[in-house]
Image (cartoon, rainbow, N blue to C red; front, side, top):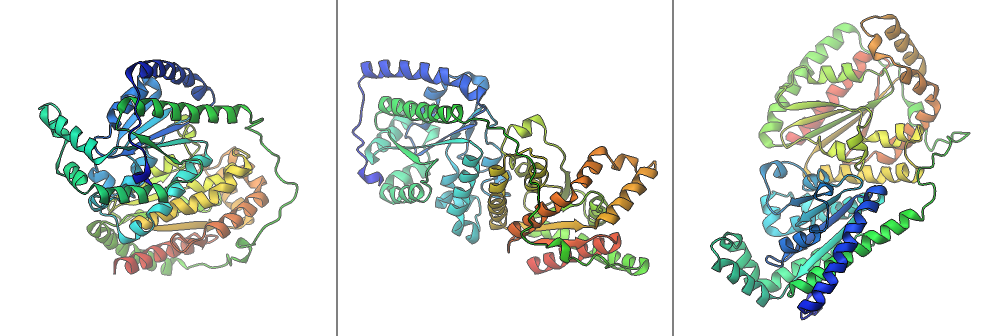
Length: 494
């Protein structure tokens, strides 16, 4: 495709001055509706070395309020990025509602050999690369993020001339390195790689725009036109959408797709002596495995979900009691902050993903999207319905990186929950654990049960399976989770 692009496109100085003045005014005027409609905008600059990405970014930013945008330079690969899934640095830099994020080099470049080598991408991550990339973009589009992808294309001769000009100036010579000259020398090979990158990530809603950049004036005008037109189209779409924040009533009846929870035997339990013996042995083994995880640089993600008063806190305590506290983090998830609400719902969780060799334990998680947000009508139906696939795709990306994922649903029956609520209410030491919200949630037990069954059915995958933990007996629940973690880690680290 790129070899068919006409790179002779150009613009004279007078025409450029007329066009650029109009476009700058247009871009400046778009800032307020971007804020008013809460539109997150991602502008991605990709292309050849010396194609003018820095110059064009400056040109675009000139008419904008510097308080409304962030620029991210993504060409380097610090160790913090190497030790996490390759999309992590992009997830953590997505814009909040009403803001603009500009990326100098994109997530698509990661598949290029020199980047894949630096990031130490596994064979699995390479083979799944375009699935992960396209799923990432789809999630953002579904959350009304405007993604504008610009590929700056120049000829081999133009690139060579620009390299020489840069090297002549002592102040800019450092910008040209061996890799740049290698790209010019093997121009045809890189052309094929860029073609493949564009073809495999060119989908409706976030298509690539190729910018003929041999002439910088023509490139600047075309970039500003594409960006302003795309943002204007989104503003028009949102302005024509009525009642975007509608909150439909809960259905009058419940139609479960599968009664997974109903088949769970909650009578299982342990006597105190057997419980203590098992826990002691398992905790010792967890401690040893934690050091092995660090040595081989494997990350572990453990998700705890369950009914209120199901025993998540006690379960987590027994899991971590003998672990090196430097190697794990327990992440309690409550109501999102204003900053978190301004981002895609997965943003706050991706910020907490562990680096290789460490363990992250989530006390509640992204599954709130298809439970609390669904039942409490905090999210429109089309959004939480999309979340099943979004969650599966995100967990798949984590697994492709090599992360080991555990997901535990701590299950108790309604009578056991009531008994625990009453015990907490009567115990001055534990009264802080019971809130009005817990009682309100209990009144919606049947609705939550239906949502949980659907969640378990739709997000139980080979790479991130659910385990239902029978938790009417807390001792049995603690032993079961410890055993599952130990057994899986031994298998993975063998």
